[in-house]
Length: 219
Image 1 (cartoon, rainbow, N blue to C red):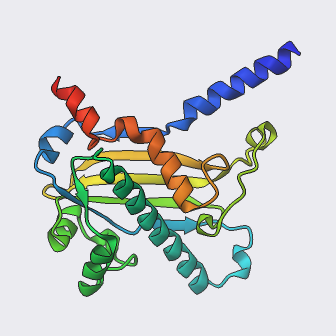
Image 2: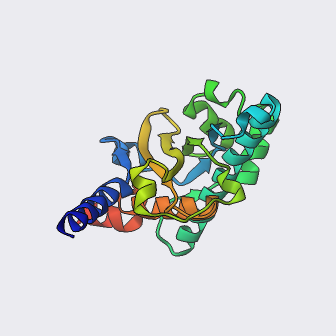
């Protein structure tokens, strides 16, 4: 029994240690972001490693990946707007429909988005900063995934659906201001919106535009 109890305690400690993920905040954040008022959220790059990918054509796999990237963009907007309505942020977020329309008008898509600097994109979109990112998935989280989870899933390495990275770059210099990386696990949620909400809540204390965080810095 003691061995089992020890394993459970160790398991809980490991899960808690990994829960927040990796967070980076630039030392220049305060200086570079002091005039930020509006941020744009870009569609995310998604790479799919599905079990049945051999049965899917390259064209359809690409479409599925694009869909996942756009759903993450929408989920992030939903999360940020909910938090903004609670007056938790010092910045606002450009409507993603406007963002995507402006990108399309300038012939920018997920196929060529990476050739543009954050400075160029911010100028085209008329914003102060750019939120972007990428994710690697073993399942289509936008269609819903299982949240059934036990210690054996974790020990056997079957507890995750992939990884996600969220970045914020300054619109004037293209410099990376903030980055958050974490695993997408069965405990994260049953769909994209729950997963994004869960992950951002874990990173909330270190989200640099959070009003309470800035208030503490001033004091």
